[in-house]
Length: 347
Ligand code: ADP
Ligand code: MG
Image (cartoon, rainbow, N blue to C red; front, side, top):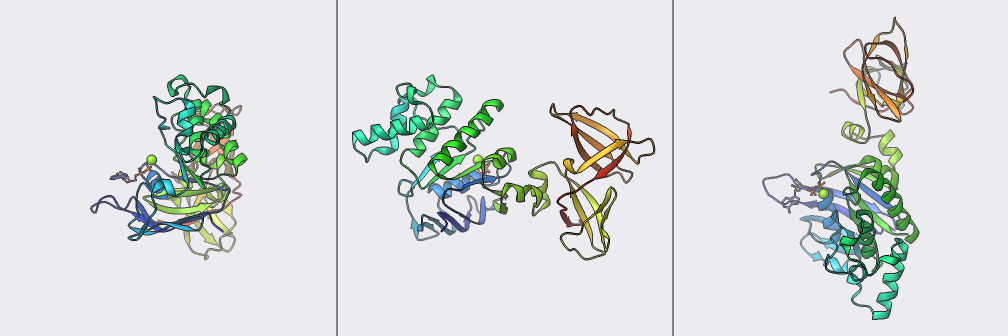
């Protein structure tokens, strides 16, 4: 049974603006990690606040562990009775309390000994056992984040909610903390919803990714499904580099300027479509008689990304090893091997 469900949940802050969350439905099984992914302002934080109980929906229902915690107009269980833990974007540690006291904060219903034992357990879990007597300002950003995670986990919540948990960390620390937090969530079997605008972060940690746009959940699925089978052009472009080439559906397949692809979606011959092309689908070889021209190279360290102009004026990108250096202006013959053919109706 799903541990967390949202059924057509909507939240509107202003009558003259579109809803921040728009009829959002999802179900999360116990022990699973869900990433809600989307650009700034798409309703990620509002969704978390609705689940936590800091906001009430105007429409829809939320259940946690089979219990209705919010039902528009009738039920509104307060945050402290929902069994949720929250890790805020800025960690929100109490600066005047020690790490120990910060972590013990949500445990006030337990005896002193129980409290002390639980604090020691969760601090050990996040590998901060030696830091109990310090104050937040005496810790690094990554350590503060681990304290925030320990504090949220201390009362053994049914669901842990994390709002852009890694956005305040430097790039190298970010990937380390990602692994660290995932390890803690997996080790404790915690069911978690974390929101992020970073698709790589969503893909590396989550079992399921839900893509939000303008308060609506456009698609929910495994990271592989979201990347290889995006439901909309918005998702296709948001979760990775994508070019779209015009294609014509024929009985032989989908004909485009750089090749003919299988009509795996079973579209009607004669239909005009846009075919999603990812940079890893495209290779090319230098050829003076080639029809495409290298117009730009983006050196990315571990790879070279090339932009190729096709005779029609459309452009596609091609990722190549960092050792493959080609000059702009070079004539080339592109070749596409599209493993996952995804098409959208032509505009
Ligand atoms: P995200 O976390 O994805 O960046 P938010 O959930 O914070 O997005 O915001 C979604 C939309 O709701 C935005 O347009 C934002 O301006 C609006 N919004 C969020 N909180 C409030 C609020 N308390 N009052 C009015 N509008 C809000
Ligand atoms: Mg936000």
